[in-house]
Structures are given as structure tokens and as C-alpha cells.
Image 1 (cartoon, rainbow, N blue to C red):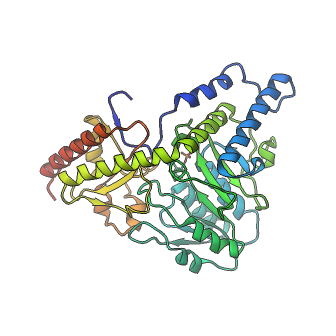
Image 2 (cartoon, rainbow, N blue to C red):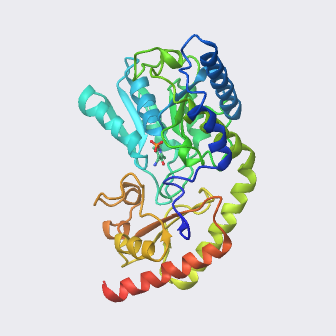
Image 3 (cartoon, rainbow, N blue to C red):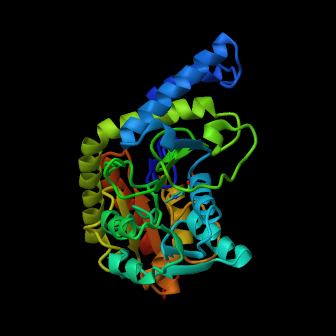
Length: 383
Ligand code: PMP
């Protein structure tokens, strides 16, 4: 996307050249099905094993605890339905700001399968209190799912504290870490987490590739059955090139993390400063302190986000008003409403998410463009 200032890295990221190179042989000569018996297929199988080992090592897990999926939507569905349907307990707990790929499977289990669902509220800062999760628990709680970092406002949840509470009660804990992994180290050897979802395309890897970590000993009912791949937990011929790309992307992400986080924070803080100096009544949504370093979500009162996004796009700045999966929907963001924003405030909000290609100059240009577009819109349609 030449000449565009891309500020939508929470929606997806550009494939890194190293990732493309790691995938290429498996889109070309090494196309054999890794389950076949001949030698070239066994070569593919052994490369797949190496990738699984690398991914497991990067996460502090064991290779047998990793299952490769088609992305985090599948991982979240598999974790939630897979644990809920594996046992007898009938109560589920999650938070009001989860991604729809967590909320919707939970709601389906409640509507169609007779589960009780408790959706825990968050504070105005976009964080859930561990005590609020604790007081939602019941003797028959089957699973708790809390995201590590929110995709719209970037707020970080107290995963360790919640995990300790759940571990003491032997309640399985699922964490959607899709947005967190770029900036927070994940060590499943010590973290009190039983299931964890990741997606390759948020970390400069390919779309349609993800994983679900399932701690050894966790009861799990597989969503997909058939050929018995992934130790009978996710049937289907492996997306070999996608897995190779994911493993490469995760390795790069782990080694770049400290530098990437410091850089993103510097750019994000500059962008906020530039915006605040031009738009006096701009408000930041969610805690700035407990937040991903690359995320900014702001309300510009009286400035409708849909019109603003169109104006920005025409001026070469691409951003979003919330989750990419729900843009196009006319509903205001459920995350912003959960923070206590009114519908009209939620409809006047902008999500800006930075990534490795962004520069300081872009931050200044983006702020000028946003401020100019916002002031034109406010003049055209004064509230
Ligand atoms: N969870 C979160 C927090 C996300 O941001 C996304 C992507 N928008 C998903 C899950 C779904 O991931 P995928 O696109 O790999 O299905």
C-alpha cells in the first residue's frame, strides 16, 4: 500500500520478507502432504516438527501442547466449546470487552446448550478487577476466558492475578493473547494459563494461520474431527506454509519485542501529543498506563467516525473506528459502551494502531490530517 500511512496494525500487519522466504519452499517444491509415507512427505513432516518445537520454545510450552489452527477465531471457538463440551460443569465466565470470537461462542453455548454465562463488567479504565472475576465464580464454573490485551483500546488485563485465583480453584483459564504477543513476553511454563490463542497475521505473518495452546491434562473436546492430525485435537491437512510462516514470525516477534515496544511507545506518545495540541477536546479511551504501547483510541466529540475514516482514507491515512471484524456494522463498539461511553461518543471514536514500519514523520502528518479532517467535519455538521 504505497504512500499510505497505515495506522491499523490491530486489524492486520504486512508480511515480513523473512516470513515470506520461510514459507516459499512449502508453496513450491515441498507441497507433499506431511501425513504421506514417501521421503519428501517425511521431509515436510520433519520441518513441521521443527516449527512446532520453535513455537513451543518461544512460548515456554511443550510441542505436544500446541495445536495449529486457521487463526484466532478458530482457536477461541475451539478453546471455549472444546472445554465447555468436555465436562459436566455448566457455567462460563468472560468479560464485556472480549473479541466477538470469544463472546459469540459463549453466547451460543448459553442459548443452545443450556450453559449459564456471566459477563463481568470492566471499569471506566477498560480493565477488569480480579475480585470481580472471583465473585462471578461458582462451584460449577467450567471455564473463564479473559483477553490479555484488548484489540480496540489496547488495555492490559491482570492475567497473572486472575490465573492464580482460578488455579487455586482448579478452573480452566483461557486467554486470547492475539494482540498482546507483539509487545508482552509470554512464558507458559510459569503463567497460570491453561489455554491460549494466537494469530499469525497480527505479528507480520500470514492470514489463516494461528494456534491454540492447551496445557497438558486439560479436558478438551475437539471441534474438528476427521484425519486425526494435531494428536486428534484438530483434524485437517496442515496448512504447512502458514505454519512455517507463523513459526518464523513468532521467532522474529520474540527477539524484536523489547526494541519494538520502546519504539512503538515513543511513536504513540508523539502521535498523542500532536493530536492533543491540535484537538483540545480529544479524549483517550481506556487506561494509558496499562496499555499496549502501539494503541491509541480517542473520542473526538461531534465528529462521526465513519465520515472521519472516509476523509482520512482520501487523504492517505488508514485507521479504524473499532474492531475490523465489526466495521461495516452500524452498532457502536461494545467495548467503548462497556467503558461507559454514550452511543454518540462511541460513534465518534478512532482507533490508531502503530507498527514496525511507521515513522515519526508519519505521526506528525497523521495528526495534521486527522485534525484537519475533524475540524472540516465539525464545521459541516455542527452538533
Ligand atoms: N482476538 C482478537 C483480540 C483479535 O484482535 C482478533 C482479530 N481481530 C481475533 C481474536 C481473531 O483473529 P483471526 O483474524 O486470526 O481469526
